[in-house]
Length: 232
Image 1 (cartoon, rainbow, N blue to C red):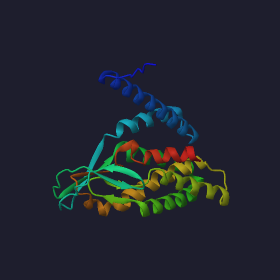
Image 2: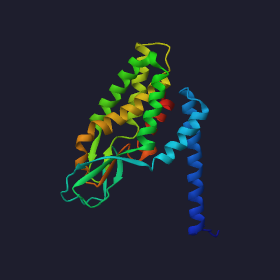
Image 3: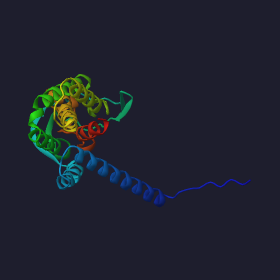
Image 4: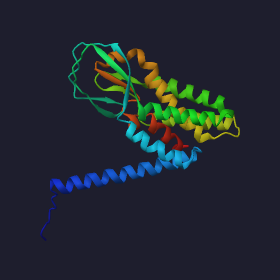
């Protein structure tokens, strides 16, 4: 029996990669849309939030500049944290770091969270408790890695947000939207615990620029909120 070996040229591989990326993007947009409907957000607003977060992930708004550590950068190409490998970049260490805030990874998720809190004011205590729990846990495990960023375990914030919400639903029941509590605690808890509580340590990143909200949509802030809704 003869054996046939299929080989793909660069063009076919690129087309397949592009198609896979489009399919994954469409699935993500649909999943995010379902999550926002569960949160009680109107469909028209969700259709603005989702593409806004995707496009806003590349928009960093400058805030201020701090002095940074300009000692020689580490030479490793990758670092391991909770079983995940992160690539290490080796930029120049200029002695100062420009701090920005990301539109898709910080501003939009915070705006969505504020919208949910205002529309669920009866659950203000639940919001405060779960945000505090998630922020403390995330801050405890977050790690500053020079030339990489602030590292946090991918699914941990969402899992903590869901467990905290389930505990409240059990021991502090009420007529509030548990999905909204899970989203807000996962989003704001991660942002506060990983980014805001580590602002004083950003000089250790040894890089010329750092952004609150990181890589935008996929940095763990926006996705944590979405994952918390689905896990609940």
